[in-house]
Structure formats: structure tokens, C-alpha cells
Image (cartoon, rainbow, N blue to C red; front, side):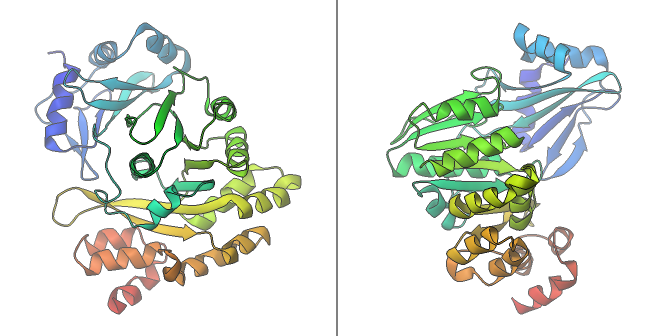
Length: 355
């Protein structure tokens, strides 16, 4: 029996799942509290059934993109009004689908149990703020919370560039223009360059994927705009080095100076299942770029930044390992889950016992 995509998406949303997958030779698979589970009430998928699901979710332009690129992102809204981020891709010659279920409401920083310094970052008039972490670590949700904080706190023109748009922001105190790659703009880099001619105060770039986008984002931050974006890095030092390494060697002294002058903060996060089974929670490392940290970046001493984070609590900084140990000690998450994500596993019990 053919799967009705609106029906199954509503079903898995009620269960509290974050993702739904269709791939050849296996039942539909959901991700619940970080764990993959097969849906026992459905049969194994085949190519015909998956193509029928694609047909239900796409228009002609999207189907052409799938045929041409073999990997396409788009957003899909069910009849019940819920939004989803969809990726259609190919594996072993067969079609597969990954669907991320999105919240219709914009979560606040308080809803997400995020520290107050993220609100302070969001209120900066200019500079570069980066939210980093692996795929599925909640980066887009954290950024949505920061944009909403701006939206209710001050008057500004916010431009977002996303692939696809995940959270739809209303005009509150801000005017918010949201541009989707592939629909409104051809790519991140050209959209970011165009944004500078559109009188923005705040620019959100969904992802800094290449040199052109990184360069345009740094330039925008230098020229008096607050720029928020993401990278797939797991720590603040890795993030800074990743940006520097994107540049040719002869430009790396210059980009270190630019980053020292523009970087406001780096939020590196990972999601862990809550011990009470009520969902997942973010554990964070936070770098607040003080004058001392800016000097480390400028002088090519990025390796010292981890120590600055560990001793920078008075400046709002958070060390991921210390935060994981705290959450485990307080019973918020399981000890084994915290240990698995520890950067320096040998230090776990020293932090744990010191709490």
C-alpha cells in the first residue's frame, strides 16, 4: 500500500521524532531521542514506493533538480501546516529521502536552556558569530533562537540566506527577509554579496560552505553588520583554523587579523538524550573573543584558546568537557553519553568528581 506522506509525517511528529528516512530494502526509519528505529507498522521500501513519496512532496522544478544533481534540498509543508527540511539523494542507484521535522514555533533561548551570553552575542551591532557542530547537533535551532531574540529586542533589518528555509520568522520589532537558495538566490556567496546592497543590520548565512562564502561573510562583518553562520567543526580552535585554512597561504596573515577584529564568539555544540527521556539537550563550548583571545588569533597562537576557554568563566565562556561532566553529575544526561562526547576522556572523572 502506498505511503501518504502527510499521514506518516503527522504520525512521527506525534511520537516526538526528529527525522524520518526512506531507503530501499528497509522499513521507514525514524530518529527518536537520537536513536534510529524501524517503523514496524510499515513494509520494506522499494524504488517505486519511494518515487511515489517524492512525487507527493515536489513540484516540477524540484523534480528536474533531483534528476540533474542527484542530491537536492527543499522544504515541504504538510496539510496540517508543519514544515520539514527534505533531502532527496541517490545510493547504489536507488532514490533515498531524509526528512528533518521542524518546529513551527520559534524556540526562545530560554526554551532551549541556552546561556545568557548568546543573547549578548545577538545584541552586538557588528561582528561574526559562529555556531558549530556535527550534522543534527541543533545549530539551526540555536540560530533561530538568536534571531528571535534580536527580533523581540531591537529594531533591525534581518536578512537570512538558507538552504532551505527552516524556521519562518514573523516581523516583530525587526523586518525579516528570508531568502532560500535555489528559489530566491542561486547560492550562498552571491546572496551574501547582494545582501550588502539591501541595507541589512543582521545577516544569517545558513552555512559557510566554501571560500567565496567565508570571504563574503568576513567582509560583511568587517563593514558594520552582525553576521551569524554555521560550520561543521567541533571546537572553537578547530573553527578558527578551518576558516584560516580556507585561504591561500599568502592571505593567512591577513585573515588572522580580520578574524581578530571581527569574530565575536564561537558556540560549539552537541546534542545528548536527556536522562528523563523527554528529548535531547545541547551541551556547549563557548568562546567569547576577548582582547586576549583576539591577540591569540592575530599572533597565530590559536592553540592557546582552549586554555582561555577553560579559565574564562567570568567572561561567559564554557568548556565543553566541564559542561558534559556537570550535566552527568546533575543527572541531566547519562554518564556514558557524556563520556562518549568528551574531548579529553582521561579527564572526565577528574571534572566529574570535582563538581
